[in-house]
View 1: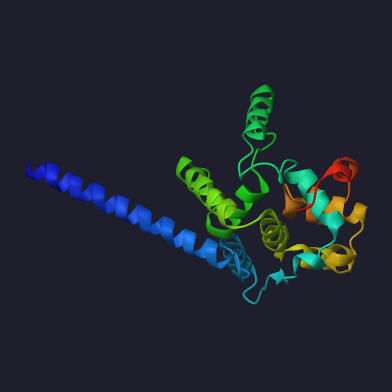
View 2: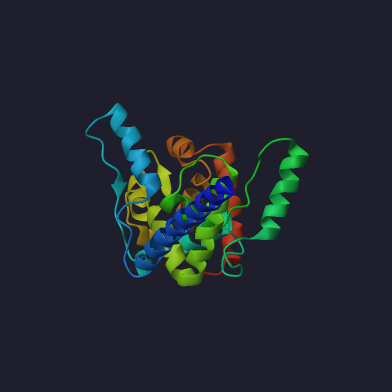
Amino acid sequence: MRALRWMLRAALLALTVLLLIQLWYFAWVAWWKWNNPGETSFMTRELASLREKKPGAELKHRWIDYERISNQLKRAVIASEDANFTEHEGVDWQAIEKAYKENVRKGKTARGGSTITQQLAKNLFLSSERSYWRKAQELVITYMIEALWDKRRILEVYLNVVEWGDGVFGAEAAARRYFGIGAAQLNAEQSARLAAYLPNPKRYGRIRSGPYLDRRTAAIQRFMLDAPVP
């Protein structure tokens, strides 16, 4: 009986700790509904990695409001990363099933099914490790974000914190790095090319052009015509 009581206490303690962790995430999600994140978990890790090679390194990042981001870029990113962004509630189960079938057919991870909200949840709080626990926590945070924020806010934060190259984060820094203009001035082709970098921004940000990137950019330009912007 004594051992059973200790097991119950341990289980209760673990449950309490888990609940407190979720409340901590929820509090930050609620705060960021009205306040802009200064830095994400992913940005913190990337800065530490850059400073291992160059102690004085700094991230290229500048927050800009939703209205100052080109609608072309919004359409391109939605078309590229999450075509059903305005319709789903955080997780696109059909996209996940389609990605799973394609990966099984090719025998490798050829595509993912993560939505913009899921990517944002991971970037804001979590690591890049592949584990069932990390994925489960990502889903919980995803639904928190969808419950508290509207789609416009989700896209605004995503476009301001997503990685676009070595030490390059957010639409404004990316537009200035690759095209020498502000994010508000991006045209359709430039926006589509930036969206094409997102699956592997460090690599594609260095290459910038090539057969695959050119084809991908052209495809995104076609699809973005029908992409709804919140």
